[in-house]
Length: 324
Image (cartoon, rainbow, N blue to C red; front, side, top):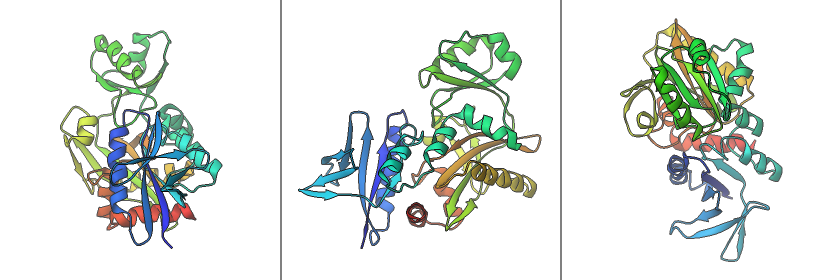
């Protein structure tokens, strides 16, 4: 008997458009002989099932069910394709845990922790995971530009602490531009992280739970046409994404080991994609994404293809792992 799969997409953040694209790819790709896929749009003002004619049916939040033509539809599993809040920060994970509905991403704690860049890096540092120098500011704090520059140097990156897809991020070269970058970041979040610039090869490493085992996918090298791997580089084709990455065997082994360690230390499940920059031959962790892009152009699907895992297999495996 085919299983009903809810594909949640949209969300409350600036990433909602990318999430809709990811969710629709999942909808189009799931094996129709095994699954009945349902597109569920999650927005602040509505949770709705959207049929192929774009007709909307409200979701009953009490049990995450949908009434269609006087028939109640419930779901065997939820495929999480929401980038940003509430799909990547733990809220949806907690909700489905309470309802005892399996879902494809990591657990509530892991989602919440990795979504908070500052907290995630702090947890991983005692395990020897190398990171950039960083300086933290909360909304309302006094901005001490001298102290910031003394700690992280110039150029530096000013980032929203809890945002993805490079929203709220600026590369700062001059002290005079620091305040503007901080203002940009505070439009996305009330916490920001300012990091030293790491000059080296940037790579993205996908790690998934595949057939019960932790699997590191082929590494992608990021060569942005712009100054750094920003929104345009990620989604508008303004970068080269080279899979497999042009790394030495030593570099490859080092970053594979670190990426697997991060996944297992954090007790992750489902998809993850972490970003690293090599400095002095050592991979330095930038961040961990737990609901990475799933469009056909996205990095994780590119890596899966390089590992000879089709999109259909990738998504099917995610559901099978969740159902375990």
